[in-house]
Image (cartoon, rainbow over all chains, first blue to last red; front, side, top):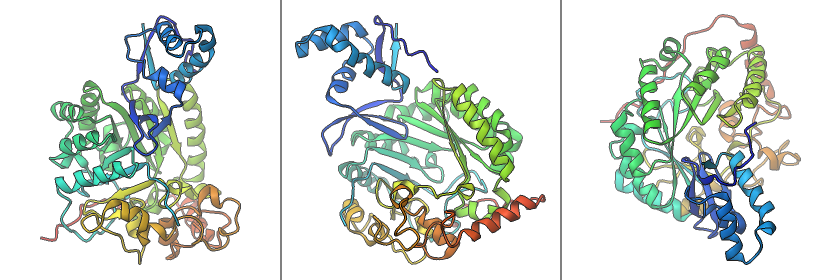
Length: 96
Length: 363
């Protein structure tokens, strides 16, 4: 199995095969990839929309904390779960 | 009954193809009419997106034979569709790959007939293997996500370990190992192509082990031949539920092989809007849901799992598209499948394949 430990300094980006798209019927955000799609909940959407390959995992956490006015530690476990699932499904890549 | 929203469109741009694979599921005969022109396809793509579709697969035949392919890809992209090119790779050199990537192709699925040229070219009926290797390089260099598709049958399934290694060496992100589905040319060559039970058992072990070994590196999909299954495949998630196909002449079909069902009339995009065809047409509504089902499907607890299986297969084997898919062991027609299996598991001699031919132009 792939190593799912995510370095907090790494900068996540959508994998090349993945496109972020708004579903024209539901208005929700989805990730599209070969033969599939993943509908994002609002937390996942907030996370993924920040994955531009320039901002680190830690900085994404801080930016979410500011936007939602909650402590980073409160967010950490939810956000880590999203990152590790998207990493496992190879929808995000993490560059150092 | 009300229709759900469709998610994916298969756009069959042409039935012409440089390959002659004996397992092709394209129709063996087809009344040749004029193929849709660029503007008509652009309209199909827009109407598809408006209907809720998010994925388009450009297929055929060989979609690269359309000179306007990049324009169609650009139109799909503009409509927000995720674009997958389903190709033999023939004609996909560096410049074309870059052009298509520039137009917005997201991923490409390239077929390989085997892991080495001699066998692959025999199956393709033409020297194709080396050109495919070049196409794969061009795709990767252009930054397009790469899937490989290898069709398994009696002459290739024993090479599964080599095929998987071959795909990994080409750095495919995704490998589809699809056993032949017996429609079109594949149906004509059924007794020549069906693997034996022993071959299937070995292949399943190889594929299961490889899935684990390549996890995180290359996704592997292995599809069993349904003749050896206990229950039928949930064909496309049910008739008119998630998918639609538009064929080269603009006929709109619930699945690519539905044209083989006798007595069904399909609507054409030249005469009706796509949304009307999806929601209102009798061809889409006739096998939607489970009202149409006969016994044993009608009262079967599995009817919401496999939807009675494949309508095309029922029609091909029993001449009645509303019967239970005969691969189902609960079907009164299962004998039709068992007889074929019995024959191929005894016979050792292999008859020659009947190679795929292109549709003959009407003028």
